[in-house]
Image (cartoon, rainbow, N blue to C red; front, top):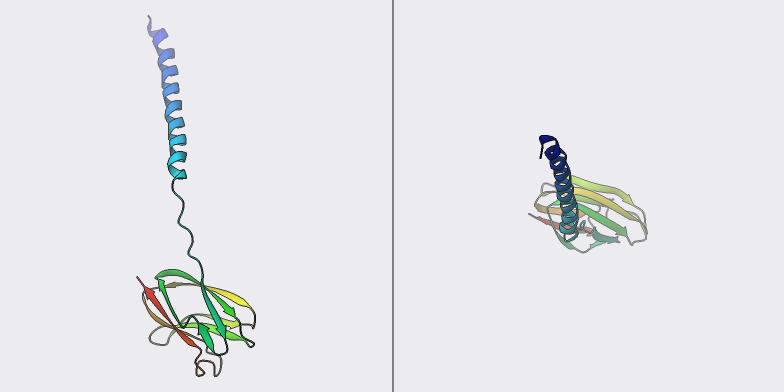
Length: 135
């Protein structure tokens, strides 16, 4: 056997070995990945608004990005305002027309927040709720 005979056989062996490794990697990767699903996106937190109440009255969620789906089931417009413990506005939906639904995405840290409708007279009439954000 000469040196010229060994090189082509080594090259063929190397190419074949690489092909098998790639095939195993691809198929094995697909097999491994098929057993795992990406975590589902959190469902929006549904809040119902009507004269002069939010439902539910108390909400508890985990910290991070939260999507509120606020449905106005009332006959008049309302809004949705999140306030921190210092009564500072954290986020809001300025107006939700009667019969409409609006979404609000917000990043929240742990703590207790007030949900209020701050249209004239609504908060004083009891249109408030409590949001507790846990770590």
